[in-house]
Image (cartoon, rainbow, N blue to C red):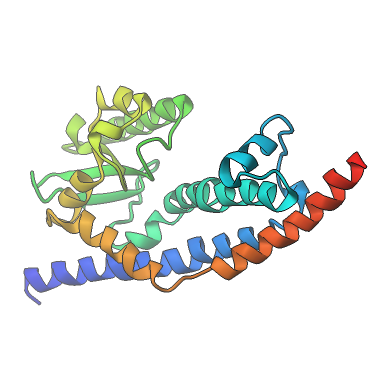
Length: 243
């Protein structure tokens, strides 16, 4: 098998695994979590803002409007964003199974297609998905790899210990990532996928794959039914108590 064909098979495998991962881990959980939102106790009602947000959204502050103001942000924002970040880190070995690492504290290892060096990489989801404690943890993991390299006479330079961020750009990286970047390279979005695969456009190919997957889903009827059911619960628990 020639090198070009082998590399294409690796790229095809990444895309296939990503599709499977998204359908099985993200979309299914998204539908499941959306279906649960029919009761007010699934939220943390804010009596100071919920009525305002309802009127801001629909011009009305009835139970149905409040339900919409609660459901839409959860379904289209918090729920899917949190799930994607958590699951992407958890299942990076599934998506990038051909690059899995056996080194403690390292998610994947790969030959950088731009500089030809072996990279020891921790995977993160997006440009705002780590906190200050993660900075210390990541640096400690990399320090452990450096110590292992010295013990085993391995040629591992500081630029070979990297953080790979699945999506976003260098300009979007949080201050926590920028702190890490002072000592170890943080490869974000397009640069990460370019170095991993050797294809400058692979990040955009993967993004287009999301568009293909999106065509498989239309949950508009589910969302509307959840809003109706939640509105009934709001009517019973909030409005009835005022009478």
